[in-house]
Amino acid sequence: MKKHPHYTETERQHHLEKLKESKAGLVAYSLSSGISLSCLRYWVYSRYKGKDQKEQKPANFLPVNILEGEPDPVEIVLEYPKGIRMIIRGAVSASYLKSLIG
Image (cartoon, rainbow, N blue to C red; front, side, top):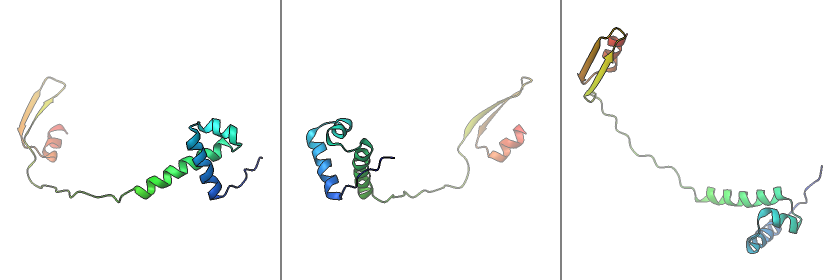
C-alpha cells in the first residue's frame, strides 16, 4: 500500500493557493503537482466544511401556541359500500368520527 507523504499546514495552504491561482481542476493540479487527488479533495472540502461550521449560528426556535377548544367546522362525507351516504357538517371530534366509522 502506497503511503501518502505528510504535508505541513503551511505546505497545504501553499498548494491550495496555487490551485486557486492556476484555475485548474483538482485532477489537473493533482497530476501536475504530484499530490494525490484524494489529498487535494480532502484539503479543499475540509477547508470549506470548517468555514461553514464557524459561520453557523445557533438555532432559534419560534414559540408555538396550541389552542385548546373546539375543532374548526368541516364537512365530512362518509360513503358506505351499500350506498349509504352520511354528511357531517360542523365541528367534529376525532372520537365521535371514530365511533361513526367503527
